[in-house]
Length: 259
Image (tube, rainbow, N blue to C red):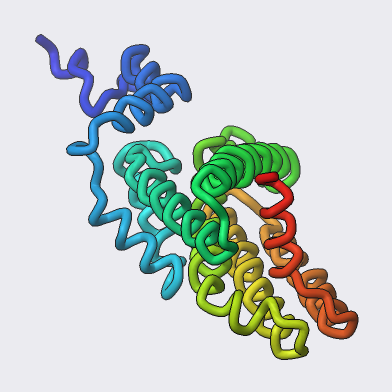
């Protein structure tokens, strides 16, 4: 066999992927591989997922550097391991049960709240935000000279999950220890503590989202994703001036949901 007929690393002589290798990189193939691993816990790297959860609080840039490495080694930006999603789901379930306990809900009320939070707040809203950001980034943020590149929908969903995790921990876990004794009270310190936790949580969400899209080298003007910070701070100051208690509103909404 002539050396020129040998295809190495899945590419032909002109550097184009063969049909077989190109099929492996289709969105459908990636989705199938991801869903298949979802039912094989031994194939999931939970230790690495825990490492990501830790660094999303302390150094989220390091998490996105790993996304760069995945692109170089596996030719995709999005996660191919559902371990992070599984651990996030566990966190969500445990924290929601804790919320039900703090709000003195019964068993069936807590189960109903859990279903609402998982399928509406997390999955439903997450799919909506990921799709919206996927559309906006591909429509308006891709550099003209790099039209051959696009943001993977799976990556947009991963960015949402990354940003949602710190928000979940702050509002659904840390906040639980202050609700009944501090936040729910009608005092100034109550809504100050509660609204400040909301400020930090949503601020984390905005910042981690910005880091996710700014990590893509073919996007431009990603700094506009930080603009909601101005609106967030303005709303925070208005809430303090008017005495709004966002956590109290959330608790009332949760109780209304499970009626």
